[in-house]
Length: 289
Image (cartoon, rainbow, N blue to C red; front, side, top):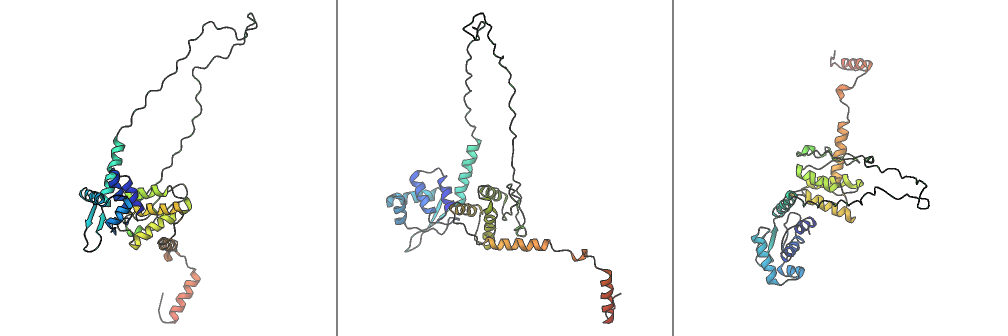
């Protein structure tokens, strides 16, 4: 079951029955779209369709490039879901919506003010000859209120692509602490930073360490983002546990210890100890001057 792949399928612009069949396949696949071999009977049960309808939608999905069927003699077919094809369509859809200009809002209606009375009645009706206290003139140009300060927060993002930088800080300052990001491409790091921003502060580094640990262990074959999305889902459900991240924490601890180790060439020795050492070596025939 791949939650991240099912989430991507929901974003596709497909007919409802066809999308239901693709969702049923994603429910039986992993994040890479493989290890998927549900029987047609299982798909019929999940989608509440006839076998003929399911077969028709499978053929259409394969023709449109969403899936690939691999026949196996005596057993159910094996399916491969083309994850890259699905994500490419989602990106094109997002790009198209971003390029479409938003509909301009209708101009606000300016309320009509009543005509000004050039000869108003006195404000004191009980005494015509008693001058009424005139109200202070209305300011046509009121002083604007002090604007609230505008605050922005930009997260600095440093991308690493070599294994030697696996435990090097990648920036990601979320106004809490400096986080250590996994080794990934620039596009992946941006997506992971966006996911981690919605994660509780005390679990952000643990989630990033888990992603890097899974990458080092070979659990993640291609893109890191689906795995990161799965971890965020587990954190939201309260089922997240640390596994691969322990190794990454140990690596970072060892590297920090090596960085803090003093340089032997910079240590100043006491001249008295130097003389004693030379005398000791001369006594043993080493002949140090």
